Image (cartoon, rainbow, N blue to C red; front, side, top):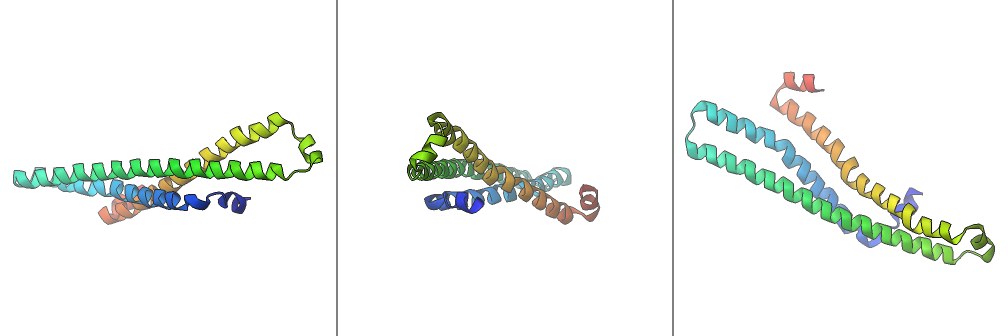
Length: 161
């Protein structure tokens, strides 16, 4: 069944792949922000020149804007991919129903067929969108957070894990 559903992606593979790339970029930038924040706090405590503090602050703002941009682009491409996936799925269902014999068509009421073409496909579309966005982003954030915790310090990492 998953193979059959994956076949409905067809010409929307590029938006799907772009979504994954931007989600990975967003997760990486979001996990790097605490490193830069540590540098900013150390600069404030160490009595570093104000221009250095401004540079680190601007880097933080730039990283936040980059993360926001990656998230926005990922949302756009994900919506495009899932809407295209649903369009192709409806198209395939419609053509499949057209091949039914009269006996098979009599088994399904027209309201049942309309429900399958709208509500069920919309639910599959939302599941596809959630799979691309949440199911990919959450494990990535978990893995990147563990890696960053080990980089920042072993004691912190063992408490975290």
